[in-house]
Length: 179
Picture 1 (cartoon, helix red, strand yellow):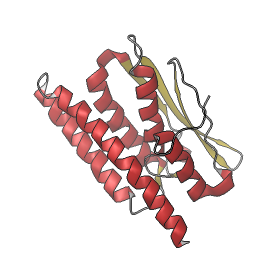
Picture 2 (cartoon, helix red, strand yellow):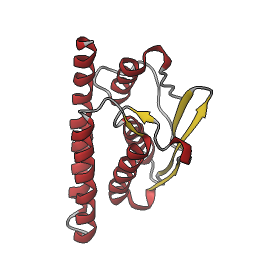
Picture 3 (cartoon, helix red, strand yellow):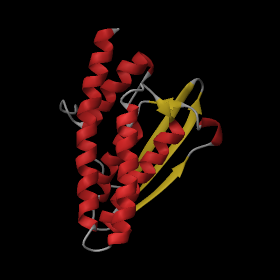
């Protein structure tokens, strides 16, 4: 049990710094252009940091809280990408209290920002949804970007870390499909 906890902590510590540096860069690019909006973004960043630190103590968080953090993250990125970033979130009321690993959806949203919004002049739309399939919670993050090769992700890559975190928490029941 201790080795599982240590492995999970190690994986989470690799996720948080990457996420925080990306957020800081997004906020700093906004400061000269729109100080009020930058202040709002700093508040959202503080929410993200607080969530990140608090969630390090918890193995799972409520999906509703994870969604709020994803919205804060996407709003910060929207400050950077403006009209190029669109998003839609669908969370049925009966799934608000479902539990997920902290920053799991955020990792997927960040990947969509990087590989869909960031690489296309016209940007992209990111769609995030939650549903149930039999006994399983199904979370989807889809975008209309060009896609990428979903081969083996190198150690330290956000999606590889997420896949490992899901395996530690949920075992064989967990599955991360990249299509």
